[in-house]
Amino acid sequence: MSTYAILALAILLEVVGTTYLQKSQQFTLLVPTLIMAGCYIGAFYFLSLVLKQIPLGLAYAIWSGLGIVLIAAAGYVLFRQTLDLAAMIGIGFIIVGVMIVNLFSNSITH
Image (tube, helix red, strand yellow):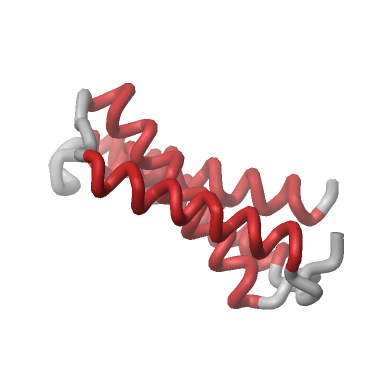
């Protein structure tokens, strides 16, 4: 499996885990809490594999940037949480930043 596929899996697990964090109602519901914990463990395991190939700072920039975008989308779709214009512009800057890192940085091997 490619490094970026593993990173995508790590990000997906982190997003699912964060979604279940919301559903756990502050750890008062057992099943969502267990799903959240399992997803976070898996996410950090796969991130640790990625760090063999991609420097920590860049891997985490991609992880956090895409995670923010996907969590915002999940919040909108699943929990009807809306964002104001400033938040959407800020998330747009995050997307641009992740693109710049991936397209122009010599620190990442593609």
